[in-house]
Length: 404
Image (cartoon, rainbow, N blue to C red; front, top):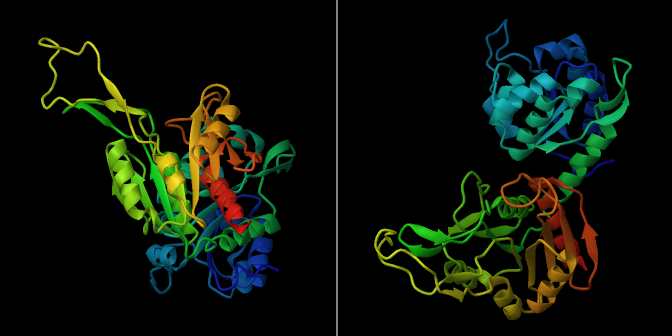
């Protein structure tokens, strides 16, 4: 029986699919695990399973509408969202997934989801063709990009008697996923983590710079994951758009490599773990023009460059016993050899190897595939997956490294 769910507040969202019968077993397991569960149903879900059954198991009235018809009592989706330690939508139909992904707040379940501050777990369940449809894939990717956890559906015989992917994950598997999530939720408590993210910009003149395509998604995902797990996190970020740090992450914005190094040096002495994901420019212009260089006048025939400081190597040489520095390497050829050489040269404890060789990896994507290489030469290879999930894998490996 789970112990990590004991005392947790869980909102269980049930939608109108044949797999709703499994939600009864899921609810029973959650209650047995010590969780306090509030069921929220869509109107269509009541065609598959009765509120009376669910209320009897949970000990709470089931919420389906915005208000109680007889009394006019208002059901606050905001209060529910704040009350929950986690929200689980099981089953999640294609319709509800689409509404969640696009903010269509036309029922109590979706409005509760939109108000939820806690992590949200989505368990898709639908027929084979619906699961395979591009719109479903797109909506699930949108939900992942928002930070939701997708518990993949399983393969087997479906309600249509077709055989394929679309079955809702088994209730015990869902409970195990929640249990693991809460088990890790404070495993970095007391640790101070420094993360670098995004690109650096090296000025040529007031309007031009040398930079790269980094969006900061990987670094922000790692910073957010460390914070979720209880760490005190400082994120030193180059200029990025469309990514955000979660509440509690201290963000220091910088532009250039030298600014990033200075910011890191100010906090490194009090850091337990440093994760260097930023794509730092290797070179900068030797001179920066004070005014915009006009092509019609002098133009630019060549730019003299000088080396930037190597931030990971600087911290690697400075680190003391008990401090861990993890680097990132993006390689296009001889990937493993080059990554291992960087690990040794920079005196790192581990390095995460990215590649541009596979579709859906690298700068600007929401997915990535990495190898985690420890300084003893051990290589752990992960499949391509959303960067939010890659962050969990990387932090799991760092936590394992700390334990050893």
